[in-house]
Length: 404
Ligand SMILES: Nc1ncnc2c1ncn2[C@@H]1O[C@H](COP(=O)(O)OP(=O)(O)O)[C@@H](O)[C@H]1O
Ligand SMILES: [Mg+2]
Image (cartoon, rainbow, N blue to C red; front, side):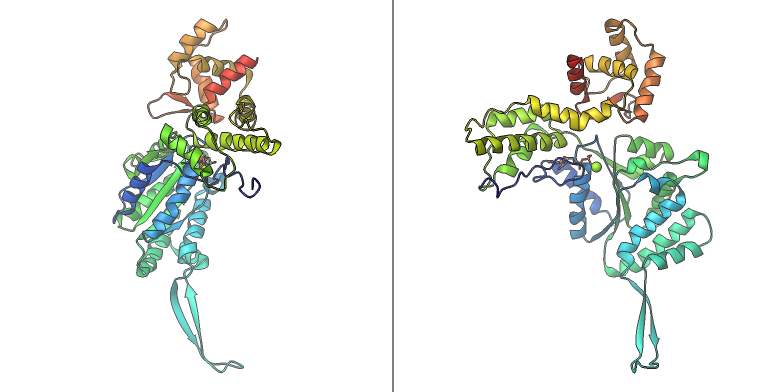
């Protein structure tokens, strides 16, 4: 019996959880965006790593398709953002997936040789046809892509679909490279703004880390009006509880979590989806082993080992990216009242002057924070304050301090 029901929890980037808790507001917002006839708002799903952006985007897909939208897109690797040409290839390849079956011309070939019947040859709007349009349109990359998208829609709209959603995960990878005179990010924004003005219902759905939206606005100020930004946050207590309990509520599931244990998972995870999956998966295994051993004290699960494993699996790699002096600074930040919330240079300088023999000057702190932003440890939010780019990093740092 214990073997038949497998551990349902799924800690891992992009792994669909056994039960997707909460996100009601986000579903409603997305539905609203789907109702647009003329696209005035595109979607951005943003938030820290592990908060559930990828799986939510994945869940939006069937909803959009049920509402008669076509859906294309992938992860935006850094390579697709190196040059404008790469981005163009990306868009054309993605679009070809839904245009590939559309017939744009038919030609009757007369009976010839061994074949006694005439044959109809169909030309479809696949990758080759789209590339042909692209290459034979004069002008810049943007002009060429516009021609591809416009032609595609001319045929796609005959199918009765509402439009096409271009969904790109990890879109914080998009960047302009002024040094190389390559502006793929600006190109993408210009392109969609321009075709949306022509009432072509192609919508962008981007997900990415909190750096994404500021980056878009910096490239093109009109991005501010072009996107509806949905920030995913931790789950609240009720939603966390559902994420923990629902997957094991099946009558075949041999494991039950006691109420105090559920409480403990909520507290340890801070409601962050990745941590919920991680901790629950460990707890589940520990309890199964107890059942196998005939140890009926399944209420008693020690947290220390789970925390240790989480530190090794999730945090240690990120901590490893910091230099010694950066770690000193991170430890100062962890001393703040609420390190897992936002903080300022001033906060850090003040605390450091109290706790360190060798304190930091404001300019030094500024410089180090920006270096740590580049390493993906910290990010600057829209209000110019800083936050850890990793959820619950403050608590982890405190544990390191104790272990020193
Ligand atoms: N709403 C949710 N309820 C329960 N688990 C979730 C939820 N959203 C995400 N998860 C879990 O959290 C982890 C991280 O999800 P993911 O979509 O990869 O995050 P992100 O893309 O933001 O880094 C996965 O293990 C996933 O199963
Ligand atoms: Mg993701």
